[in-house]
Length: 233
Ligand SMILES: [Zn+2]
Image 1: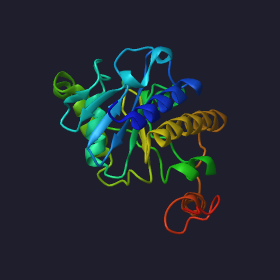
Image 2: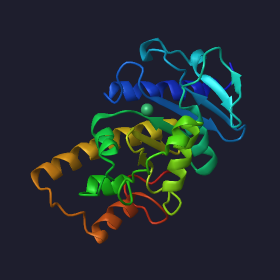
Image 3: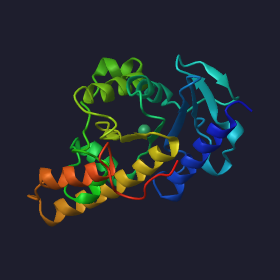
Image 4: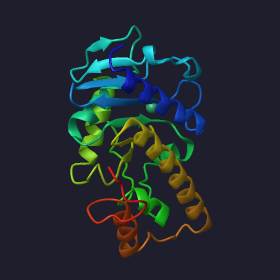
């Protein structure tokens, strides 16, 4: 089977979205990329998660051609490919309609960093895209969604903020691997839920101080990170 290991990783990461309550029915989709071969493994369209097998995971090239698999890929595949092309360090993309993150997307409000939980994962607010125009929606909608995300990150670092809210739609998250993309989708939902509660307690809540935000992000990420155990290999 072509890319058996990647298919298994992508299947497992898709199931993680289900286990964590981020998707209902066939909503959501997650992919992973093998950068050496330029091939993407993505959930097939409309297949119930409980029936998914590694062989059903669709394999596509970055031009959008199906290379292996009998099922159609998730209809959001052009968005996934756009992100892989624009963000060179990412290895996985997750899309869900998780409740609280989607509420922020529908409200067209970025998720502010109110606490260190957010700061551990996202170095800044989680941004929201501009609305797509009528012609973008009528045209290549899923590709235009990817273009809107890339425009939102024109001056942002996708490795430091591994998530976005698509206006009126829902979040897309990413990470170095398919598992990381799922993990970030889970954390995004957790952070969005807490931000919503924070605003309900005090609508005037202030974002975390820049120093504390930087401290928490930079102790886990980048050259001078010191959180966790030293990797021995
Ligand atoms: Zn969607």
